[in-house]
Length: 615
Ligand SMILES: Nc1ncnc2c1ncn2[C@@H]1O[C@H](COP(=O)(O)OP(=O)(O)OP(=O)(O)O)[C@@H](O)[C@H]1O
Ligand SMILES: [Mg+2]
Image (cartoon, rainbow, N blue to C red; front, side):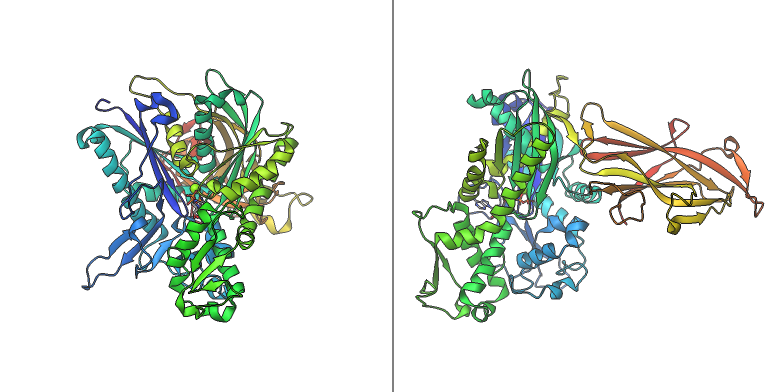
């Protein structure tokens, strides 16, 4: 390794756990074996861990005015007194933040209210669910957390490379985001990462299931199973994590000289990850011991990270559904007041849970995961690509023996194989590194070809425009009189640029443009604005006013530099006022899981363009 060479770092900021992997350009020659994982995190017990808990606590200082001490990841113990902020990731996404399910989950993870024993209206009355840390926005908290993650990762890499060499390396970062992340949530994620001091020459995004798929494929290509996959084969990848289960399907289009794949169906996912199993355990416990006993258990003893929940989490990890396995024993907090009860299988405060009961606790999440897999299989078949050959299962929940067995039971009768890459928990972080290696150029000028050649648009994308009023076509609510021309117009008529399911090739980014006209008087600010709208329903609406049309971002361009003399002039027939007309091209480029924008005037980018994601 020489000074100035490339070092690609992958960051998987997960709902419950986060991971960091890295690979330098020399190690990349070893393939996926060259991708290393950060495995020592502050506060962990002996041994190593593939990922570190995504949680942070601000411990109030004893002296007033002093800054709070930050505890994070494994430094947070069940004895930690400060409020533990978990699930920070989901706070970055407005859609999730607003959902009842999310607020309930957040309540459970932050111990605000008692497990499932909550009146949803309690939490839902507050616009943002349980309170955040005073003075800290979600981005602040995420960046505080990611700063710690980065410091720990930097420390490990400094050990590997030596501080001086490490400082000289050309660092490139790839951050994974959920496939369903809004453009705004991606923007907030990037902001938090930038603030966390990852000073890298490039920061790119990749979706979590795609990263996992890239790693899985690359690994398969290197191993003895490389002949199991042929051109035309389709596989489904299921990333079962803490918050969500995400799915994606690919068709293999090329094997030599390297794998190339195309998305075979629009990805899908749902909030049914392993945290929902924990939540289900609490619901079951309440039914088992009765609401009265359950309600006596203090909140902090049912929260994520508490002694009881940690014991449950450990039992959950190895649960396989096999009745011959050891019985599951969980100590119930003394406050419940049940020390011995034969009928309840409680002895000396220890509750024994049998396989059947544990299966009931797992089933809601497992069944939803199977439905999602079935949905992908169905979409692939409907898209005329035949039956998928394999289902790959990754993620923390994905390594669970019971979930894996249930997936196998689904696949086997259908003639589909079930597979898992090694260390499936960190597949996303490793895959982020594999993606990063494809994105850049080595110091020798060599470039690795990307695995995913074609993605499918997950939404319809378009922009609303005004049209000349036509009573037979337009909705009366959309009618307005243009203040400059005095003409009757229809506002908010959708112009869809990309349809859901459209192919978006990686090599040839899809560039689309639409003409946007603006009128202004000589003394007015010269600014043009456009709104990017998305729609996830199958049929996109004609009107912006329709609920299915949702604002993704707004673009503003300043064109004060365009000389007035070059613009056509008219007069308002009613007021006689003189006004100018300018027609711009709004250009959107769909590439690399992100959309970039330009405003063009007469073929050239004019003025400054700003994009805002706030509604
Ligand atoms: N062997 C296992 N069996 C069951 N659950 C497991 C196992 N290992 C980890 N988990 C659970 O998986 C979750 C962590 O998985 P992972 O790290 O993939 O999720 P995440 O990345 O935090 O979430 P997301 O991808 O939804 O943002 C935790 O809820 C953890 O309890
Ligand atoms: Mg994940």
